[in-house]
Structure formats: C-alpha cells, structure tokens
Image 1: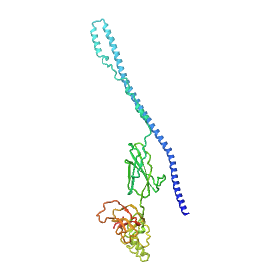
Image 2: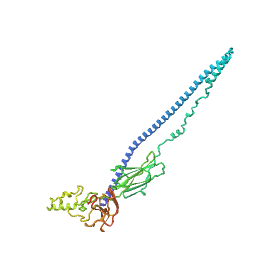
Image 3: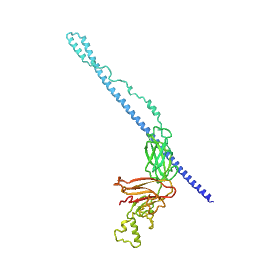
Image 4: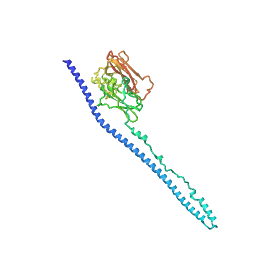
Length: 437
C-alpha cells in the first residue's frame, strides 16, 4: 500500500510539473499571438514610412531637376533673345546704309559724289553688321538634361525585405561555468558575412530546464559582441541556474534569439554561525570583525548576574563594550565553541564533498585572517590551519611596513573539502577584518 502511495505521489508530482510546463507554454503562445499583431502593425507602419520617405525623396529630386531645366531654358532664351535683338538692329542699320549707297550711286551731281562715297565707306566700316557674330551664342539642344532611370528602375524593382540573420546555436560542450565566471560559446548555422555583432542576454533562476516566461529576475543584456563567444566575469552565483540566449545583428536588423539554454551555476551558500564564534569576534551573517571588548563584556555580564559586578568603575562599565546592534545573539550560554587564541567562527553548513569556491573581502588595515575548512572535531583551543583537524589560507599583514592598497582588497581561494568526513567552512579573524590594535 505504501509503495502504491509513493508511486501515486510521484505521478502527481510529474503531472503537476507537466501542467506547469503546459500552462507556461500556453501563456507563451498567447503572448506570441499578441506579439504577432503588434509586430505586424509596427513593420507595416515602418514600411509605409520608408516608402513615403522614398516618395518624398523622388519628389525632391524631380523638383530639383525640373528647376534645372527651367533655369537652363531661361538662360538660353535670354542669350538668344539678346542676340536676336542685336542682329535685328544691325540689319536695320545695314538696310538704311544700303539704300543711302544706292541713292548716292544714282545721283547726277558729280561734285558731291566723292564726299558722299567717302561717308558711305566710313559708315560701312563702322556698321554693326560687320562687327556682329553670325554664330548663335548658345545651342538649342537640351539633350544634356535627358535622364535614364533604367538602372534605378531595376533597383526599385529589386527592393525586398531585409535578410534577417539566422539564430545562433549555443555550443554547450564548449561553454564553461567556473570561478564565478561563465564562458558561453555559440556558432552560426550558416556562414553570414554581413553579421556586424551579437547580443547576449542572461538571467538568474532557480528552475532547471527551458527558461520560464515569468521570472523574478529580468534579462540582463550585453551588446556589441564581435566574437562568437563571451565570458561573464565577477558573477554572484546566488541561484542554482542561469538562462542564456544570443541573437545576431547586421547593420540594419537583428535576428531571432537562439534556443535558450540553462546552465547550472553550482554555489556553496552558507552564512557565519554566530553561536560558534569566539567571544572576541563580532559576527554578522556574512562578515566578522575583531571585538577587543567582546570577552570582557561577557565576563562583566556574568559577574553582574551574580551580583559581583563593579559598575562604578568606568573601565569596567558595560557601556564601553556594548556589542554592535548587528550582532546576532550568541546563544552560547557561557560555553564557547572556541576560546583562548582560537579566534574562529564556523559556517552554518556542513560540507560533505566536492569542490567549493568562495571569496573573502577584507579592509586594508586588517592585520591577519584565515579562511578554510575544518573537521567537526576541531578543538576549542586549536587555531585554524595549525593542526590536522583543519586547513586554511592565512593572510598576514603584520610583516608589511604599509598597506599597498587604499581600497578594500579581495582574495579568492578554491577549497576542496575532504569527502571522507563532514567539515565546516571556517573563518579565523585575528585583530580583525575591520579593526586595528
């Protein structure tokens, strides 16, 4: 009976997951229908605008060319009319001179003839008809303003919708997730020399499988990628997976996104357990500080509880060592997990195997700290990394004359835990992450 119930529970879980996938797909289809209407209206509007722009350009060209014809016609008309008027005046003058010469030739008065002939000769020499060019200044040929739009007409007839780049294909075998970085590699299904750049989008998610349309985190965009691979650095793997998709763009239009892929982003998530902290450490979820008065405050409180506290002395006043409001209640009840010079605090999650990565940021004036892993058997008095029960990466700035950086530094380490036994991630702070002596 119990086996049947368990089998039925599995069926119910499977059906619930499948129903959720179908609902997500239905939502996707409905959204696509809306997108088809909106996108078709947009491209139609864009097409009409492009043709209107083309019509306007042709109309401007037409007006400009007609203006050129009118100007050329006016200029030639002006020149020909001026030349015609000059020739008309020269002809009238020449006809008058001809008539005078004929009358002088037929005259019978021989005494006046020499003088008259000389005057006619001088008049002929100065006559406009003999100083006038009988060649037209301009031509009546207007063939230089003819047009041939055969080539342009063929280009217009060849107009068609822009070729859209194909959707890239993400190569999962070549892609890599490591050290808070993701390197994504893709390729084009067909060679396309007109591709100008790629656009990568990614987002974090806790769901395995195809990306869901409804997610709390939006798509993050990386534009202007010139190669067929890209590495995202300095990521924070605070969720289980990341969705990725890529599209190719030419100079005018972007293609469809690739089939989205989901990559696992394994991360060891833990916080510091204040209940395991040494008294001289002030612990928040993800930070620890040196607290020189931590232990003294505990002793003062204990003595006050027993009625033995000396609150009159300023040195022993609890107000001098009031813990930070960020400090979580220790819950130690007077029994410390670490004491003496074992300034250590444990993480709240056990490590039972695998390889884990984390980063530690520390202030420039920090003197020393360590981070590592330890068996649960690590003793109260044992310092991290000093015995076989733990291992750590230790940073010691006591030997440096001065700190080389004025900004918070960062160290990273990849710590393989031993699969043979459970261990904790530990942080040792000695004269503090943010304190100074």
